[in-house]
Amino acid sequence: MHIHNAYPAANAAYASQVKAAKAEEAAQESRGGSRPHNADSVTISDAARRAASAEGVIPGMQGGSSGTYPLEMYQVPAWRAEYMFQVPGKLGVGADWFADKYPQAASTSEAERSEYADLVQGHYHAVLEANGIQGIEAHYQATILDQNVSESLRLQMNERVQGDDRLLQLMARMGKSIL
Image 1 (cartoon, rainbow, N blue to C red):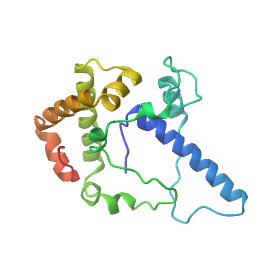
Image 2: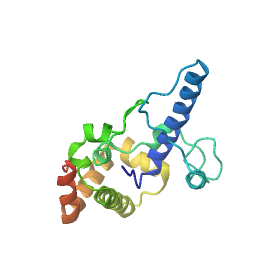
Image 3: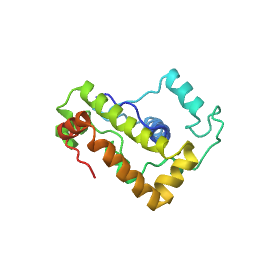
């Protein structure tokens, strides 16, 4: 499966999970344990590290001009998260977790899942841009703290999605619906 086009907030949370997972794996190995038989492993390429550093999304990495923000500021609103697929919150999950949790989406091609992610992300960014929302602080304020603005953004997103026949087709194939 190809996980593609994630919002920088997700990248920060992901990086934090990877760091914790590696620490747990090292601790388990030092106690004489071994990795679960069918566990997935994750590595972050040098290019991804450079990109994350440039965006300033990984705490402790230099390069972002906006500084380091508390993790909660990297949230996406619940209504936006509904367009995504939730990843397992524990280590050692087998590679078939996606098909088990999202059988409709798993039956689609990688190209369709990528197109779906690109279309959703494009509409989300267009809504934010149309409302002058730029940067982590403004995003957090508008989508998490100010529920009236967040609801307005949700309605705008729904309107954009309803006007995109291809995205509606893909949503049906993925087992997703408009909120």
